[in-house]
Image 1 (tube, helix red, strand yellow):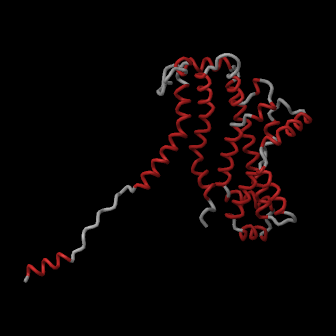
Image 2 (tube, helix red, strand yellow):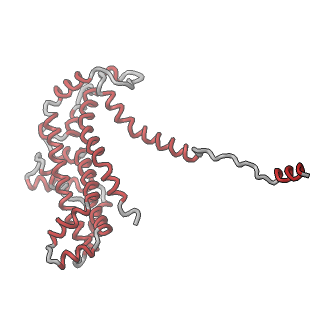
Image 3 (cartoon, rainbow, N blue to C red):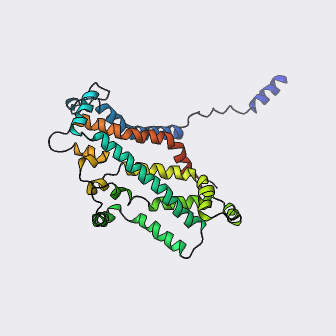
Length: 294
């Protein structure tokens, strides 16, 4: 009898279910795709660093080198020989990018404050016109801009690059959206009731609350100004006034291109951007994701 009960009890015991895999197939495929995309993004930078340490003959060999060599001092010497104003060009790039970034942070935040927290007639229509300019290709304004700079007598001067880039529609849009979503109107109204002026409200209350958006806008603007090629190409004439992208393009003139020297110069030009991105990446992510979750 006891054996029958034990057998019947054993018959009703549930079968053990197999344990789920710790790494399901979908997750593995997703990680593989992300890794492949990351490698594709990093590969050009890695090859640029590698080629900066090899001679032209080694770079043009088949297969090309995939590890670092010993020709970096020779490439740097050739770079400075072909581009005697390279360090000055680097300084001009810093100057222009810093000036454009500072002006964009100030003017775009002021415009964003006006569109987000001030009431005036035609505000939405004017903001719609600003946003509509984002739909226009950048090259459409190149000829009128150059003609305007020539009329002002600013050709071959760096202010022809700084003033037109001092305020952009994208920056105004970003700051307006951020201020409208993250700055409490009650706080602004309370400051007005206390007798605080509009500029004081903007400078003391609103601006400190928009630091993530300012960091994001500053990083985007600095990188865009640093990498700007067409603007200096149509405005700047003297080689000692070139920015870094234009100076590196001058290496690709007649004759054989010194790819090692060009890679060394490109590596030097990219290094400040990498440092800036590492320092500001967290603020960039905060500025882009703020408002995504209410």
